[in-house]
Length: 351
Ligand SMILES: [Zn+2]
Ligand SMILES: [Zn+2]
Ligand SMILES: [Zn+2]
Image 1 (cartoon, helix red, strand yellow):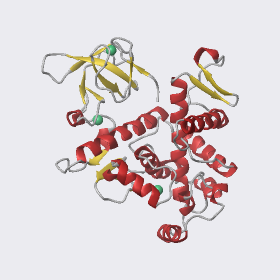
Image 2 (image 1 turned 45 degrees about the horizontal axis):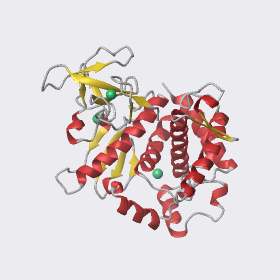
Image 3 (image 1 turned 90 degrees about the vertical axis):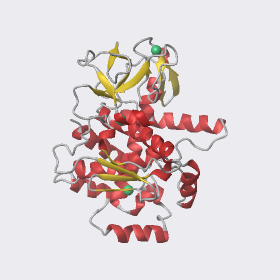
Image 4 (image 1 turned 30 degrees about the horizontal axis):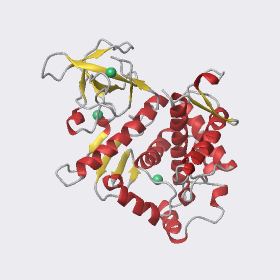
């Protein structure tokens, strides 16, 4: 995630903020420029806002808040000229939880916050959310209670109870996972969506099978076998997680999710002035090399050269505060090749 500043006073603000704590201006996220902007009402009690400062070709265009702002579930802005009342992220919601049920509103807000971070990454990559040039359907989300989290033909279902930290921890232990988060779920499931767009076509699917295996093997049988006997003891040699061993589709989605974790973490580290290198972390001005855009870089090796020392440093930092590993995974040679494949396809699939 980039570092954001209030366009009215220059103070640092967070992606989720709705007010600048320094100058008091109302804030929103502008998906057009992928930046936070300060806004002020065009008229008292009206829903229309002017942007303050900012840049880009639409800087003078008035905006509204996404309809979900009234639930405290969204701080994204919608151009006044847009035909929809929902922002670029919320317009992909097909089902939201029943907000009259106890606890649902808080849980849904957390899901929406995670979903905004996911959408930020997809927009930064330039990946299509509407199926793009492929025959795939547009992306849709069903966020509902007690459903099976998963992806089917463009629709991502997420169990809103995953926003409950106690329940999520119970499931994390039940499935013996080192890591489980809302954002992790979303990054995994969106991987299945982009498999349809980027992988499932001639000229690519053969390379996929060479790395991940034949996805035509029966999915339900493979999953049942995984839940009955678990991953093979040496799974870490070939897979980024135990679950990735269940089926080539799951291997792809797990690898994809890790790629998104890495890119987001490296961008955040850079935005915070931490330039990870094999020699350790260097801060801000001390680092002599020019900045690069991790979402647009051509070289996978350059990403890994930053990610490995960063993740080691963060694990150490986390342990020094008495927590477990920040990134409890080891990237084997085979996993590295799969991550490089994801990298190449994202670069090729960007619009
Ligand atoms: Zn401000
Ligand atoms: Zn929204
Ligand atoms: Zn999956």
